[in-house]
Amino acid sequence: QVQLVESGGGSVQAGGSLRLSCVASGYDFSTYAMGWFRQAPGKEREGVAAINKDGIDNDPNTIYADSVKGRFTISKDNAKNTLYLQMNSLKPEDTAVYYCTADHLPMDQYTALWTGAYNYWGQGTQVTVSS
Image: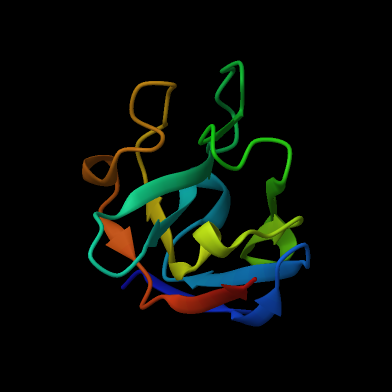
């Protein structure tokens, strides 16, 4: 079965950086769209960034929430079955539990950051940014 395991969360001061990792198993990694979502206490889960499955000629291949554009970068390593989220210039409002997600359907600009577009979710990793 599909399994997604996140790591790399932690506590950091504002302006710092963290890199989250998500190791996937149970499916052909390159054939799934993947994303990062986050959920802060008392708030709904929101999309942060997404990257499309291989072989899809979509432009853009990666999509970011406006709140993280220019600060976060999503990437993946097919050889390692691993999805990454590099987070720079972190702010206190980035504090949340971050979730890795995947789905076999290709993502587009309308569905990439929508929770309903993804069937598989990791357990989450906590990111805390202090001011």
